Image (tube, rainbow, N blue to C red; front, side, top):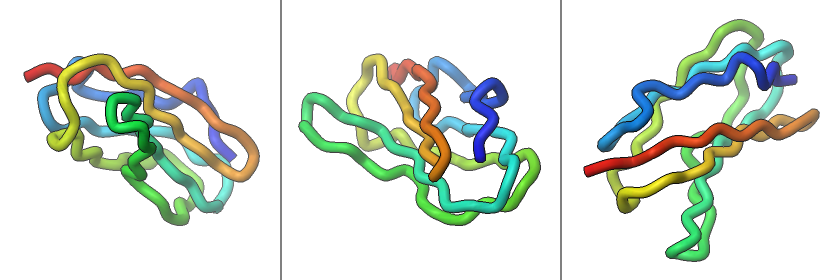
Length: 88
């Protein structure tokens, strides 16, 4: 699973790239999603299996416009969200 209390985004605000760090409690498949309401779509920033421990994932946010976004981290057991501000 996912310990939602340990999810962090840095830097925030960001211009193009951010790093998401989180504590993974068991090996499982995770997805990191970014809903883009202006485009009415959901972009997948990461999908794959993560092993237990502290994990860091680099996120490319260069293709979206400036503004506030909510990033969702999904595991089979739960979903956690964090807000991020993209500036230019």
